[in-house]
Image 1: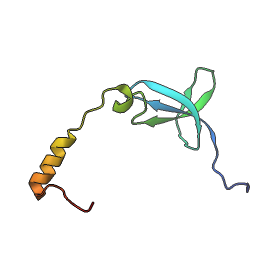
Image 2: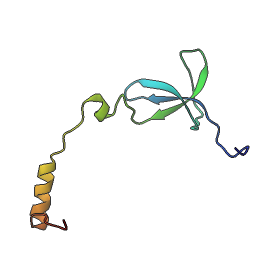
Image 3: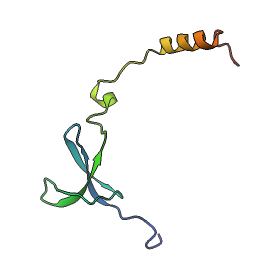
Image 4: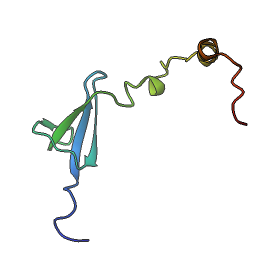
Length: 86
């Protein structure tokens, strides 16, 4: 591997403020903010909009999409029974 070609890969805390959840991992992401972690060390912190703790799919609060209604709406708008190329 050539020197000075790869970005710095270091420990970073990702924080989901909506869920009050944070996790420590390694990343190339940088931040001007730091946070004191459970191990006593200080790490850069990156705030994220959504994580597995707040994402509807992982929390079990996912919406069910009415796909049959969407197909009927499409057929009503554009006609036909969708008999395209088979």
